[in-house]
Image (cartoon, rainbow, N blue to C red):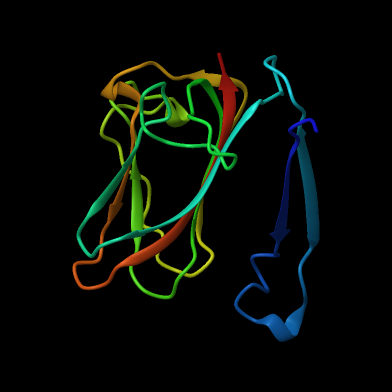
Length: 168
């Protein structure tokens, strides 16, 4: 069976005059977008998947290395050896805690500078997303590791990490 990734996103736009007064009107529009990443190695394609839930202790961190030898496994149990990351979605799945994503030393996510951090995700269902049609190059070593920091000093945070890309 071919590997196919389907990501569906709904974006809801509100009129700024009514957003704080829901009785005055509803959303202007809902835009539902479905992106399909068929099996393959070219632009807009992917051939490997990582999907796993994690708990990060209060004040702790989780490091994910998607390069060969990074120790991560695909759902079928085979090792991940990603050379291009096409998508990364990190969703908060529990009520407690919060997290931020730190850009790796190579700066691949959103083409940001190394060490930059995202906003804090602290509400159940909050999600960090990265999608790149052509993919972001992943190299061996620590330069491309994704660091997820739990920013609450009192609560653990439960997250689910979904990543896909191209392997050798």
